Image 1 (cartoon, rainbow, N blue to C red):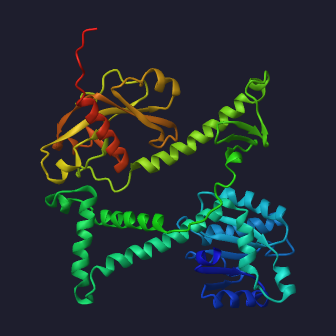
Image 2 (image 1 turned 90 degrees about the vertical axis):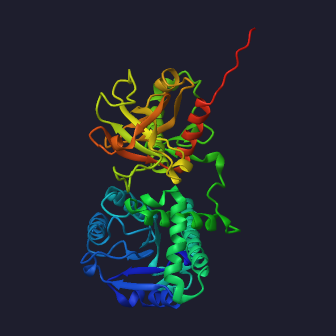
Image 3 (image 1 turned 45 degrees about the vertical axis):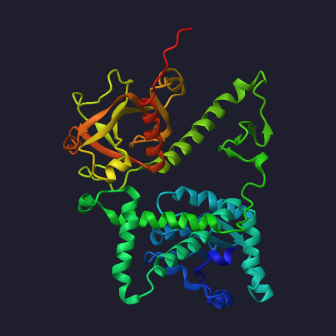
Amino acid sequence: MIENFIESTLVIDEKPNEVEKLIALLEKKDILVKYLTPDKLGKNKLKNRKIIFLDLFLDDSKSLTDNISFIRSKFNKSIGRDFGSYGLVLWTNHEDKTQVFREKIQKDSGNYSLPLFIIGLSKQDYLRKGDFTTLFVDLNNKLKKDVAANFFITWSTLVTIGRDKSIEQIYSLIGNYRLRNDNLKYVLFQLAKNITGIPIDQIEEYSLHIDAFRALNDMMNYQITAIPNIESNLFDSIDDLGFVSEKGYKKTVNEGYKLHDNLIDPKDKDFNKMHSKKIGELNKEISSVFASLNSRYLFDAEYLDQDKIIPGNIYEIKKKGCLFRIKNLPVGSTPIIIEMTPPCDFSQNRSLYSKILSGFIVEHSENKLKKSFSKSHYYNEIHPIKFGDDNKIKIMVFDFNYFGVIDQSVLRKPRSYKLISRAKEKLFADILQKVSSHNSRLGVSIIH
């Protein structure tokens, strides 16, 4: 497993004679190796290396804390935020010291890319044996205990395979090298145009190359899922699967709660006194994680252009007198509209006006969701999400009663309607289906 993941390595050691056999082993397996002494680390930004090997005690005369601080400072200078995924192998046979390192380096989150996994191995054991031949077996055995790292390494390997297969399939369509440049551009153009269905006369105003990348991503996704015999032990122990807080409270997938792996009985008379506050904090933490995931999964806030009106565009209504602003908005809410022109009309350039559905974004509350936004004319499924810079958990609601058309020239004026995001394909399709169903309901007049 790990051999397929490792394309390149960085070996940091002050004693080159102790790692020469390690370097020889890596090169024998056709793995790119870069060697640095500790004093050279941090001089320049590094390109991605899938595994970094280094001594936890780079300086034996200093304490564990000082050595960890030294490594963190060097990483801060040499590893950027876009360094990519990698693993860290610390030369130490003390798991408790490795755990201290994990806890300390976690404080650097946001400063640079943190390791996908951090494991400790004893370099002295390899030196006593005289070789590093069991290294990959030892790495795999360690990683089997790190289920999450194991999964993402497998996924990363599959992405590489899927990427290469997708490129090969596209390029194989055009066998003639002399004609490949022109013909591939034509094929990629058709694939890209098919993503949003944008009319040809609007393409000059649109970043179509982004959709070409998205089309290849779709092909790659198919290749990944079509690969047989994918094995992972990610979900082997469902009964104990859960989200754990710093205080040791765990919410399991079957909605139960545990404290340090002991079940908490909600019927216990002391339940509210002892646990309810901590469990409430745990649920807020989980909701925050879900909100961040939903925001990434449902919305695209990149590559936005106020002049380009595309189905799924979400606009903040900036002026009180603007059309389609919902009356009696909830306190603290942000009024919005979403462009709802069906893709077929958009692609055939048959829409002289934009179809619009109005809504709002407001801080999330289960009470509001159940009591205020539960009627059939509300689309209330977009929650929890994070929208804006305040990091608060929110809900986005659309009101089917506020559906109409608007002149497209008005949507290009950010003082009235500011483009803030775009609903991705699956969310847009679901809203379109629901609003169409609501608008086409007939009802039956029956005397009972």
